[in-house]
Amino acid sequence: MSLDVPLVITVAPTGAEVTREQNPNVPYSAGEIAAQAVAACEAGATVVHLHARRPDGTPTGDPSVFAEIVERIRERVDAVIMFSTGGAAWMDDEERLAPLTAGPDLASLTPGTVNFSEDVLLNPLATVVRYVERIREAGARPEIEIFDTGMIPTTLRLVERGVLEPPLAFNLVCGVPGGMPGTPEAIAYARSLLPADAAVCVTGIGRSHPVVTMMGVAAGLNVRVGFEDNVFLRKGVPARSNADFVARVRGWAESIGRPLATVEQTAALLGVQKPVTSKGVEAR
Ligand code: ZN
Image 1 (tube, protein in one colour):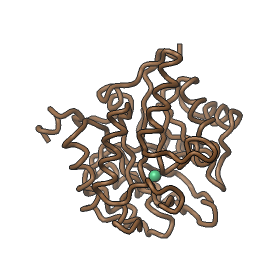
Image 2: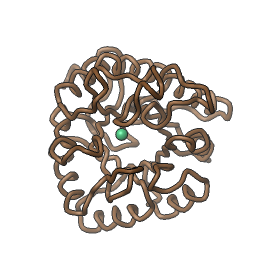
Image 3: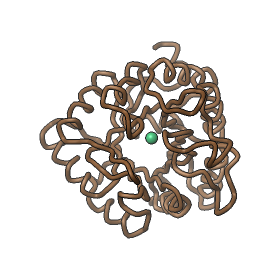
Image 4: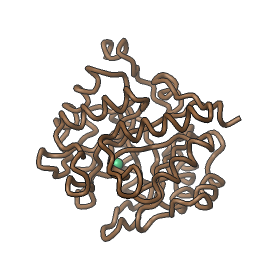
């Protein structure tokens, strides 16, 4: 029964696109990003999906900034740490891959090309294969970010070729202008293409955020929330922090009796082999 499945909440505290003009509470500096990530984990998140910024808000692939954020998070809470390899639309491959040297547990992997509003997130197949290799070399596991349903058969072909190894962790990212919409029909169709043993998270970008998130909680899926995806709690109500989104999801889960995943359960579900609790951090 899907409501017995522990819910993994991922927080994506800042992304590469949103600005303080859209919501003054969006974190920019390493300290601000880490503080909001910690508060989100204390509210119930167990995965932190990171992008990094310069203090003026410009996205950066500088591994030292990623390392500082991770260190500040791990001082305070246990969490599974995921780095974006999507970076920002204008970054080249090396800048998108550079953070991996800072040693994340998970790294996002986009197995195809998608229009991203006016930009293009460009991922030819040879590039995807190279990203998989670099993620493996960094000792991390991929989370496969599906922006459109055609990326799912592409992923399964990479499994057949031995490039990717199951069990797979997917994130269905819905509502990007250029990708699949954040509707029940789109999510149901995407799920029908996925392997039965895959871990599945849903993310609703922008206006689709509350509906996609609520659907994920009710359908026994995992969810991602945070300023990267949406800056409003509801129309006209800006979130005060990333923890606001996590607390809301936690309330939804509690209201229907769905438990939240522990950090250990999260790591096992997403195929993370490294220790993720503080005991494990000492052993790193
Ligand atoms: Zn991201």
